[in-house]
Length: 182
Figure 1 (cartoon, rainbow, N blue to C red):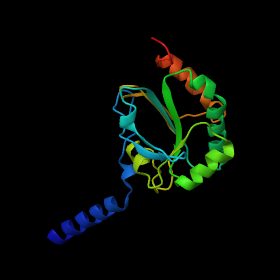
Figure 2 (cartoon, rainbow, N blue to C red):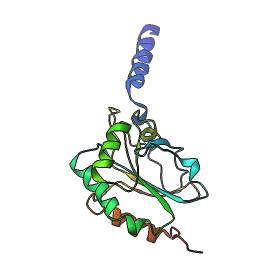
Figure 3 (cartoon, rainbow, N blue to C red):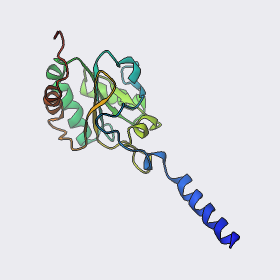
């Protein structure tokens, strides 16, 4: 009996140890405190959640892979809707688990006017609960984080071609402050 029980424990422990942490992470819900992200941008700067709390809202639009069809459309859409997004007191980014150099090339190729956040080890995607089970990429999710550091919206059904405009519309609906508004 002891041997059978011992084998079962070893088997269960082994199964759990080979699963990536994201298998157990939950996607933050509206009202939750946003994960304490810390990522390097394609512009060479480091962006941290704590830098925005009490100052402005944040959008992080995660995409799976640079230089792929849907991801290219999504990043372009956010660039094309930049003037709409810039009306709001918000910092906006796209993000992926691609290396900094690859995201830098991708941002340059699209002439983006905002940085792509880079999470090559998947630590931030894990905190957001969106790292793929094999740990290779983030799933397409967008998080709108309020000035108070709380999640205002989570979008998992993204229309890559209209995402920028859709986000501007969402900011309006959520009542995110506009720039120079008193």
